[in-house]
Length: 464
Image (tube, rainbow, N blue to C red; front, side, top):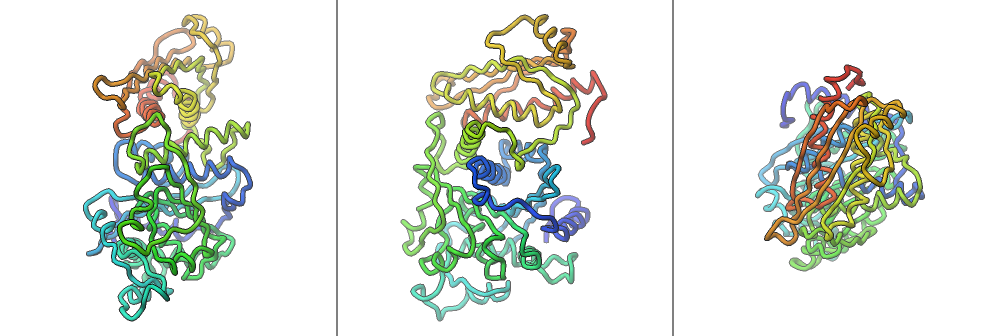
């Protein structure tokens, strides 16, 4: 099994993680939390993890953001004639709670091999309670779709390759696959829980993975499945058998054609679970199926829920600051083109969260107008701050491209004596991301320069 760089070290680390998985209680399902903020933060967490499972510039930035918040990634790569799979086991110890959260995530279509999986729409029988039985059952020719669960062959191939093909030789007796290890831990500790998530193809695999774990004895209350733009994976018999075996939330953006594509092209596939319909933000013209659109929706939903709740406590998304400094941020001058001006309040909240994620003691001001530098520094001193951070964001339409905008951040960092410590400018466009995500991207892109300037001025940093 290919485990990527530094294979031996990674394998040892993975073994310890798998050995410890679910040994501490985790929060109950978001559905049981009984509040909109709890559900919104879990959906945002799953959207961030699903976005980060792809390999692209914006996706890696999201992964870095999660890692800065304390989330750890363990990648698993597998290959077979039918599929090349990526699986991520993402986990975090929740500060001051003694709790851990585990997420099993699968990326969507990102390669020619993945496209072949999507197009392998022939239905195969779905049954069994072990990897060998899963494989044998799918090869049976004596069953019919009227009486037995049948599923999409490509999605089934991907799930089997990712979780049930190769034993992890350095774990236990060396004969168990990743899926068997997870199922064994869950069945052995019935109060433990796993969240499964994915976008598009990844969402389909998350559903099939949950169904396999259910057939291996995992109880419904031990799993929570959240998907984004996922197509149907099986026939009516499959849906009816598994609709009570685990909770499934399917988030669907209005206009996304993929979630219903297989039903239209190849009859007999049906959806199940709770469908959550969302409208695409009018400030973005990206393809409705894009994970960027789903993440944008999850961000807005989260900030709306947090505002309505009147609280900032979000244990899934708590920060782990690494720079010990008291920084005064007097205002954020955010001015977007009128077409995307509706994003400004969300951008302000997102940028604040990023600053809080890196700096231990930020102090945010509410000045409606810009003041002179000397006045800002005096205010910073009176607040006991070490630095003054001035943030300016601009969003302008790119000529000849009606729906593409350039998002630019200009930033100045001063000490409280008025000395310029760092000045930078970062920009990107909304060609592959939404305006809100572009603001997050340029802010994240500037964090290293900002923090290096602080480190040059002071060695007072927290352990990383």
